[in-house]
Structure formats: C-alpha cells, structure tokens
Length: 285
Image 1 (cartoon, rainbow, N blue to C red):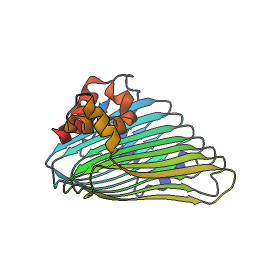
Image 2: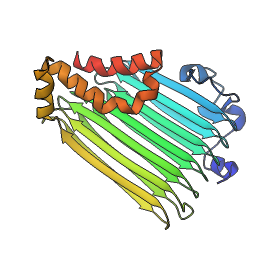
Image 3: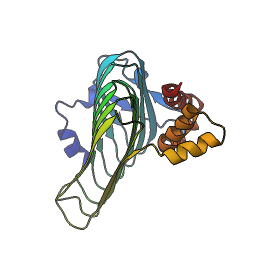
Image 4: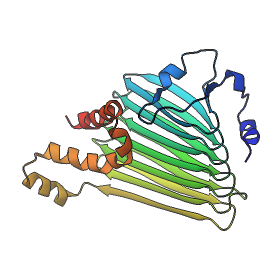
C-alpha cells in the first residue's frame, strides 16, 4: 500500500504538525520520547522518513495516571525500534493506544514492558507491502494490578512478515485479559505471520483470559498461533532451592528466565538494561 493511502487512514493528519525524524540514530543510542514531544505545536504523530534506522525509548515510572496515544509512520525501507517501559505503583492508571503505519519495505519492532498498575493497552500495526512487523509485549503484575491488552497485526498488502509474542507473569491475585490478533485482508497474499501468548501464574489467586484471534480473507498465507497458561513448576522450584537459593530468589530467577529473553538486545544497553532488570527484580524484593 502506498504511503498516501496509509496516511488517508489517519484522521486529520498534517505532516507539517507531525514530529519528523530525518536521520538515523546511532546503533547504540535511543531517542527519548519525552524529548520528541516537548513541542506542544506538534501532533503526537512520529514520521520516520525513508531509508532510516531509528530507535525510540519511552519510560514511565512512579505513581501516575496517564493517557497516551501515539501514531508512528514508518517511511519506505526504514526501520523503527520502539521500546516502552512502564514501571508503575499499585493502582496507577495507564491507558495507552498506539498505532503504526508501515510503508513498502519498512520494519517496525514494537516492544513494551509493563510492570504494575491498572493498564488498558492497545496497539495496531497497519502493514503495507513487503513490510515486517514484530510485536513483543511483557506484563508483570501483582495484587490489584490489572492488564487489559489488545495487540494486532493488520496485514493490508502482500508479502508481509509479522510476529506477535506476549508474555505475562501474575501473582498475588493480579488479573489479565490478553487478546492477540492477526488480520489478513484480501490483498494480503503470501503473508507469513505468527502469534504466541504465554502466561505464568505464580498462585491460585491470579487469573487470566488469553484470546488468540485470526481473521483471514485470502488464500496462500502462513498464519499460526499458540497459547499457554501454566503454573509455577514446583519441581523446578524445589530443585533450585536444593542448590542453595531461598524460595524468593528461586522464583525471581524463574520469572527472569521466562520474561527477559524478549529483551536480550535491550539488556546489553547499560541504561535501558538497568530499568528492565531492576523493574522486574523489585517485584520480588
């Protein structure tokens, strides 16, 4: 799909009021979302020009009640790596509604690590011809934390590659409602897509509803999905405790192993890695 048609899907889009990124970031650096949105005359629409490689990080920490809505437009043959880390106190409200539009040959890596709070999160990737959309969402909740999550790869044109990976760990009565979607339109032939939802429940008080949805309107596509909801493996826990760890440390290591593999690249960054590891570990302090 041509960029002009993609932009027609954005109500009231004005390129002059968007946040235009015209050069690549260094391989080991991120643009900060808080710096990008300082100009109040600009819409929260981030436009990545053609043939660029860009990284953006968005970090939300503390006792906050916030609503966020961002649109990402990724130009022809560009790559955008977006990472959002929300590390919220109990009962904080976080409403996030993002959407991306991918022009021919572009790639979008959308990663989100959500730690605590009452969350209502939605992300849709609209994929043009020969694009690549990778979505990785991780949720860790406890006590009154509640996650309502919808993520979707919306495949509009042919030869799209897409992957959705969702992982959740819930304990002490936390709740989750997780829905992953793959939609392939009649023009989406030769799509190659996959959706996986994995949930780890650490006790009997926590609960989750995990829903995979595939809506396919054409032939000659690959579209797979899988869902797993498991409880803590007591044999693994007892084995680790027999090696000298106390129960809390053993559980922490199991959770880290379950979640962190989706953030291997980010953990190598000293600053970003610190936010990720400390955020996960403090839930077990």
